[in-house]
Image 1 (cartoon, rainbow, N blue to C red):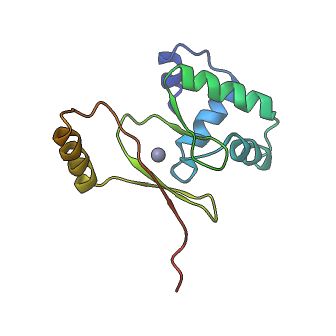
Image 2 (tube, protein in one colour):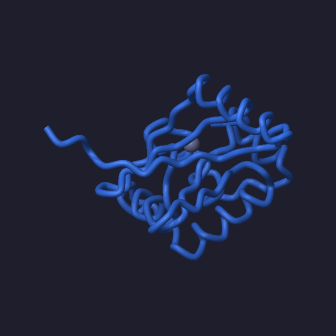
Length: 134
Ligand SMILES: [Zn+2]
C-alpha cells in the first residue's frame, strides 16, 4: 500500500485514511460513493463512521489524491487521481460506472473546438446508459 502517497500529499497517516486509500486502490472499487465506501469498510469489520469517510474523502480531494465526480441523479463518486484522462459511462439502472478512453472521441473534440477557434483546456464526458435489451 502506497502510504507514501499520503505523506507526499502532506497527510499524516491515520487508520481511516490508510484504509480508505487502500480500498480505492483496488481495481474493482475504483469508483465509489461515500456510502459504498462506508458499507464496504463496515462489511470488512472496520468501525469507521460515515462522517469520517466524508471527511477523509474531502481531505483527499483537497490534497489532489482523489477526484470527485458529480454524475447526474445520484451521489458523488470518488476515485484516486491516476493523472490519466478517461471518460465515464454511468448505468442509469444499476448505477455502475464504466471507464473508457476513445482516441476517436478525443480527436473529434479537438477538431470541433478548433473549428470554433479554441484549444481544449479540459473536458469531461459522461454517457448515461442502460443495459442493452436482448
Ligand atoms: Zn474514472
